[in-house]
Length: 450
Figure 1 (cartoon, rainbow, N blue to C red):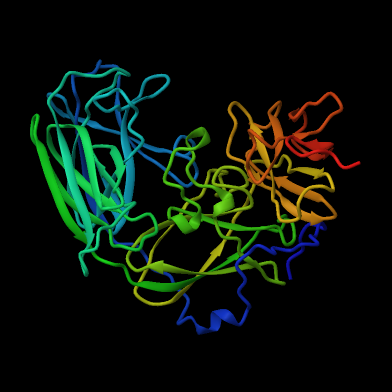
Figure 2: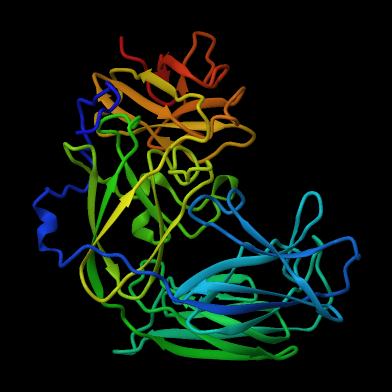
């Protein structure tokens, strides 16, 4: 049995999804599969030539860790006129989220015709292929250029029922289908683009086709999406020796049920820890979780004691880890081992807080950090007796002189905790190791008890 930290919890994962050690015996077998790769060529045609000292790069984005925090960039080669390309081996069935940037200081991401940043493009890799894209704009202003409108509707291919809330992307623009399954995308650059439809829950197979946008015209796109089949996937993970015993370990990923909100939240993040499942702690220090997942879908996931950035698992070199699983057509057990939570030998930092006795028992307490901007709130770990704790393993280098505050039910702007007699709701972190102990005197919007 592994030796863990001496801190234990009185309320151990009471909100988690429980799975007994015998629960995994119904799963067929352990799973390991080497991905099959395809050569993919990305070609980008720019709106105009760039300075000879400026390089064009393909930026593959990590949505689970927050888009701006863990990109992988590949320098592109000049093909001719205003077109650049790069060749990459990518796993078959991958769904790649990417965009193009200029390697300036700071980097300049591509923009749409209205001057808005392209959050990401999406493409499904199902064979060796050439992905041809048109970069509409590098500047933060509207551009007078040829453009058209994409309109369409999406239905269930088996019963013709309209599908609402399906993510539709083309040329880096995104929208969702309405309750009647219809959608409209305006100001799409003229030319041929990849049109992709993705159901946030994975309930339907990903749909992808080419769409040709004509100048000042509407391009129709009416199609059906096939319902996905689901299988049980059991995740079994071993944790590092310094993991606090029984700490709530979460599985974060690129689906709704794994915490992905499919929206841009604080600091370019879209995955919320509070909406991702908690794994079941085992006496040997491992964790288990069984999920029903769609066959054939590219699942990107990671383990975390916080969210996709704070307290997320790391590789040996300290970089953020994101795992990939293309769900097979049978029940499986996935065995993983977390290498480390740490970036360096410093830390960790433990923050404890005692909340007022008037705090409703069914409420959660979260810690919100501000190293340079307010990040998404991190769920704290319940100790009982109105006490909560969070041990922060990484990244610690950005914590020095960061401010923080406590929140009820993640409603930080309206339910901050007052932690000093002067009425202050925020405090500053001066040391990135040891323990910080606070007491919330009262909550905003809650009267103190007599």
